[in-house]
Image (tube, rainbow over all chains, first blue to last red; front, side):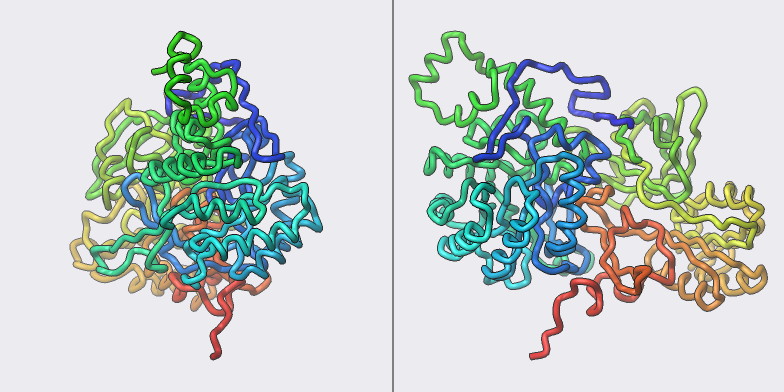
Length: 340
Length: 284
């Protein structure tokens, strides 16, 4: 099998391999890399496995699955925006049963670590999906998509209400194996993201995925109507990276010990490093996988170099390093760690 | 299996309102079959245009001084295609391909008709060659709004049994649309298979005519897509499966070539109520 890496200075030659310890952990999930895919940007890993070895990255985060098959929204579902895109897929998917039989079985056979993203239109649906997953095992972690802005009932965005978000998490926690880490994926479209974070942590999540897309829209000047059939859509890509980074930072400040999976417009190893310095324990490469199907593996390689160049021997040394006090900064200036 | 390669632009030439790019793309021509497409990254590594653009593969050469090369035909429609049309010799491009399911070819030498709308003719050239090699009669119909939006008239003439041109303004060939002349051609030649590539409206009409003449149709659809490799779910359209059930399928991996009689053309841009997983009807 021929796999070619492209671009961003890596080219087709094997990249130099620094001695950086790239192992990472999200709660009890241990991984050889802190770079994961992002839900909705990797399907269930099979397509990307044509471009890089999906067992070499942290984990595949699968597209959110619901209880029943779902057709999603009409097209147009997508619109390019400056350094990003809007999407309004509407959670098209096969439903949990086919997902378990086809996708999860394939991922397990392939030997990839799998974070299963689940979604629901009611607390009860989340619970039922979690229950089905529990019966088969195979999910190394569960990511609860409480923040998808595309569900048809716009008033039911769980992620925007601390109590509703907590209800979902309590239910999923109750229906899941106590050994399976549960992550809540938070929406940036809230007044105080740390408040939502605290609420779901109290409800029993093991970690937080930060962030989901930000709600946006575009009007098509030819039709003079919204460009998306769903009118509004989720904005993703490098355009939202500073927002995502800010959210990771704020949550790390509020909750020093909670595992955080940072997501939002990560394109390069430098971007990934920013998230780790801001407090992320691991990162997901999402929309930029559409731009470069090798992106998760490339970001892993670039991150290893970026860490080494700054004197970090491991990913864990860099986590939250951006939050250190002035005294630590001075110590570092003595030559132990090279800062740019 | 698709590969991601760094291609080098060998040549960019004008053809009517279009640009034809010849690019080295080792690994892609070797796997090519007519109907396959490639995606090309736009604007380089720092680009704010993050979505790849998809192009039907027009021509390939798997050997030669540059190794494997391929040609794509670019119509300038926006910022991304304008950037591509401005590439020059020795510029590099990020290419992924071959992608999609190719055209299905008949086992025997049956009469075929190929219909191209605008630069939708691009994937039909090598298809015509392969059909001729199998002993098929190959009638070609190319249509566009006006003469300069036709692509490849002289080249395709060489591989077609008979070429018919239509333009809506009458600037070349028969005044009208491809669907005005198609029934006659099918009738006269007893066409068994219709291959079509062009705008959705044209494909819908061609599929309907093919069905009327009990011919098999293969249509290459044009849906806007973000990834081209099956992971984003943006390029879906309603297609009837072997089991009779309509599903919203990805045109990038399950297409872009579909049997014309299985696509629910009138319902593209909607979720048919009987599609798998369609929202339950609100009976309240």
